[in-house]
Amino acid sequence: MQRKTKEEVALLYQQMQDHICEQLEKADGKGKFKEDVWQRAEGGGGKTRIFEQGAIIEKGGVAFSAVHGPTPEKIKASLGIEEADFFATGVSVVIHPYSPMVPIIHMNIRYFELENGVHWFGGGIDLTPHYIVAEDAAYFHRQLKSTCETFDPTYYPRFKTWADDYFYLKHREETRGIGGIFFDRLTSSSTMQFQQLLDFSLSLAKIFPEIYAYFMHKNSPLPYGPKHKEWQNLRRGRYVEFNLVWDSGTKFGLDSHGRTESILMSMPPQAEWTYGYQAEPGTQEAFTLEHLKKGMDWITFQS
Image (cartoon, rainbow, N blue to C red; front, side, top):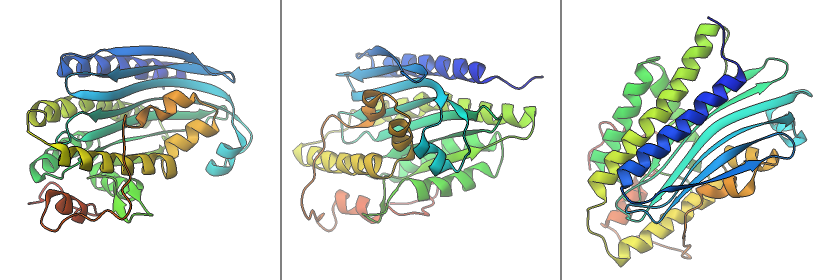
């Protein structure tokens, strides 16, 4: 068995974009994706698919890209690599629902290769509920743990801790949500190991729409009012802060001269910042803020 080429990895990722879009359209039941095909001047391009005005999804994006060319100076410096052309491909997804009872979700898988043979996989999936619910947190983390254990029993504890550290707003001293799993620069020393990492990334992408369809169907019927929507927009503001200040994927995309519209598709349709906001003690909002912490065992968490 030969190792997959970078072109074959890109094709598999592009097919996964198709699968995710089909499943999300089915789960929403109303909205449809619109596709925007783009080219990168330095080499490569992608397909950005945007979902708006669905029954449950207010705004969503599923982006595929496969770009190549000389490695930009900022990326060489940040990765500590020598002069070499690069190839990068991946799928990135962010979904913002209408209802504050339905969580925001993010998933991405990516593959990076240099012409000198250096290569690695990265990615992750995390959940940002506007309101933390123990039952939902446990379901989400059980699904990720089960997927990870199919490949390696060490993946879930390692990658959960990595996610806690990564999806963290240092300037707020709070996590973006209830975490998930995150991994980066996972490299292989054999064809078999390469295939396992590739299959692991594809399994995350495949399970993504199943997980989110669960939350769409379970939580979208729940009632909510103006106060919940105000809180939703405040939490969306935190999401914006993370993506623009800390997210390495955003920085890589901009530093590699990627397409700005596609890179910033993760932004919510509306967001708010209230100066000096304080949640009232004993409220759902206060409960959520109190538990945006690293190291939570969400599988056994009780409200």
